[in-house]
Image (cartoon, rainbow, N blue to C red; front, side, top):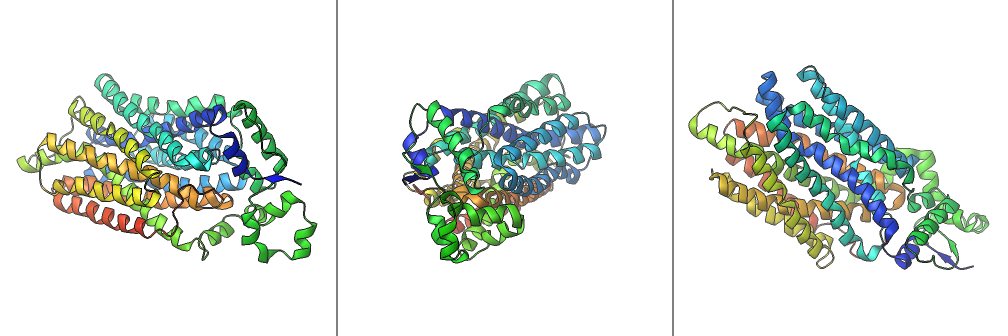
Length: 480
C-alpha cells in the first residue's frame, strides 16, 4: 500500500490560502506578545513618577514580566505538547487578555507588579504560535515564511510605540495597558476556525483526524493529497527500533507503528520523559547551546529596547548631576522608540536574504557580531542623534538574529517534544529578560554606562561563538 508523510503532503500542496489563514491568526498572537513587551519601555518611568517608586522597583516591574514568561513558556509548551497546540493557544490567550485588562485597574504598585507577572505567564505562550504555524509550512520555504511571520512582531512594536505616543499624550498609562490587551481579545472569536496541527495529531496516533486536516488544507489550496495512506515520519522507526521487537512491530497497524513510542512518551511519561529526550545524547549539545543563545538574544534584544528609553536621559542626568526625572508629556521618548522600532523592518529583510542563502547558523552568528559592533561606540557618551542611529542598527541585527533563532529551534526538535523544547529554551531566554533591566536601567541610572554596554558586548560575543558551535544546520531539512 502506498503511503505518504505530512512533509510529503505539505511539499505537494505548497503554501496556499489555508496556511495564509494560519499565518494571520498566529501573527495576531505575535502582535499581542510584542505589544505587551514593548509596553515595558513606557510603563516603568510613568509608574515611577506616579507612585514615587525607586529605580530598583522600576526595573522590578520589567523583571517580573520576564519571570512570569519563564514560567509560562515551560507551562504552555508542556500543555501544547500534552493536550494539543489549539489548547495551548486558547488558554494562554484567555489568560493574557484577562489579566492584561485587570492590570489597568491596579490600585497600587504591588498589585500592578503581581498582575504584570501574571501577564508575563500568559505571554510566555507566544512561542506556541510559532511552533503551530511552522508545522503547516513546507520545508523548502520555511525560512522565508518565518521571516514574514516575524513581521507581525515588528507590527506590534511599531503599533505599541504609536499607541503610546497618542494615548500618553492625551490620557494615562492605564488606558495604554487596557488598549494593549485588545489584540488578545480579537483572537478569541476566531478560535473555532483554527485547525489542530497535523504533525501533533500524527504523534498522538490520531491519523484519521490528521488526514481530515490535510484534506481541508488541500481543498482550501485547490490541490490534492499524495496517493496512499498517511503515516508518521518513517525515519522515527529507525530511531526507536530498539524499543520494539520485530514481532510487535509487525503486528501494529501502519499508523500505530510510526507513532507508538512518541505517543506513549507524550501521554504517559509527560514532561520528565520529554526533558530526558531533550537531554539525550542526540539532542544534548543542541539543547544546551540553544538555552544559552536564547538567553543571550533575549538579553540583547530587550536590553536594546530598554536602552532606547533610558540611555539619552541617563546621559543628560549623569552629565548634569541632576536626579533623573520623568515627564509624561515628553514626546522625545516616544519619537526615539518609534524610530528604533522601525529598525526591525530592515533587520527582517536582511534575515530573509541570509537565512535561505547562507543558512541558519551563519545568519545568526553574523548578525550577533554586527549587533555587538553597533553597541560598541556606546561605551562612551554620545549625542542623541548618534545614540539613536547606533541603537537603530543594533536593534535591526538583534531582531534579525532573534528571528532566525525562532526558526532554527523548532526545526532542531522532533514533533513529540518540539513545543516543550522550544518552550524551555524560551523560558531560559526569559532569564535574560529578567536580568537585562538591572543592566539597562539600574546601572545606567547609577552612571555606569561603560560597564553596562560591556556586559552586552560580552554576552553577544559568546552567543555568536555558540551559534558557530551548533551541531546541525537545518536549512531545507524536513521537520521530524
